[in-house]
Image (cartoon, rainbow, N blue to C red; front, top):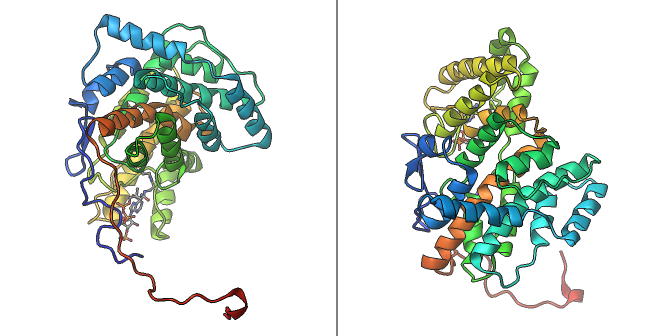
Length: 377
Ligand SMILES: CC(C)(COP(=O)(O)OP(=O)(O)OC[C@H]1O[C@@H](n2cnc3c(N)ncnc32)[C@H](O)[C@@H]1OP(=O)(O)O)[C@@H](O)C(=O)NCCC(=O)NCCS
């Protein structure tokens, strides 16, 4: 443990941003001026991207132009496909494959807008293509039709998604597009602040997101529900876990002290999906029932902590309902978050400074050089 009072920088303000604001005590998430509950279920992914990059919603022509730019950048370069094929043969983890795939893109001298479109589109393409290759399947390239999220679902599942599925995933990607100065976003800003290119910044951000303390674990949250199996087993299962001092997955958050507002948005989005006849309603009911019991028990065992449902709990259910396997959960998060990273890069470029915090030297001083033969341990 370090002796520095603010080693995690929670109390340090390192940027001004118009992109998102997280009010953890109240459970309010603002995305580019809109409450997350207002914008995420209504905007298309493209509208959200435009809002993040330009600070306002697009008109019809602007929206069309952005959709075409994303569609035009969808197919990956052949060297990236070759790299992903090799990674799939070696059984590389999907987040590593995403990092390799992004890093393989040319930084070139394209405009910021073009690089942004390439990176947003390529992130979805790499995630989907690698998923196909890792499963021993051919990559699916959809037509150049507009619709980033529809195309992503087509690429992943090799079938045409229903409009409720598109809406559910779109709501998810919008919801997680940005969340203050989280670790990957901060990493991205640190990198771009050196005046390097966007490909380098996004590659670094993917590396940060891969870490289990950040990319989170929606998979384990769902695994817990599967292990419980039926509602009548939930109380004893959860009680045993808490008695043993174990954590309930999908509950608790470093910033939110009330229910994570993203959990509400995703819970509604998942319910709509089930109401439209997609997915397994019994599982939905089990997830809701387990949540209720878990919250009651957390209140009983940790009365002073205010541990509430976090985003991971319903993320898991939503993505599972779309037919996504758990290894696709964190890469899919990146498909949404990449737009937030790039918007932060744009802000950092326009108003930021090279980020170079200080450190306190706690090592020795005045050591004397010893040749190899003189070093005794
Ligand atoms: C996300 C998380 C790391 C944030 O934790 P935090 O607010 O920094 O809190 P701490 O890790 O310091 O824990 C504080 C106390 O709350 C308890 N706690 C926190 N989350 C808990 C959970 N999900 N289940 C049971 N107890 C929990 C800890 O055991 C600790 O109790 P103690 O003080 O009696 O030892 C934590 O809530 C967690 O591990 N959650 C489960 C994993 C998860 O869902 N991760 C995804 C997050 S989006």
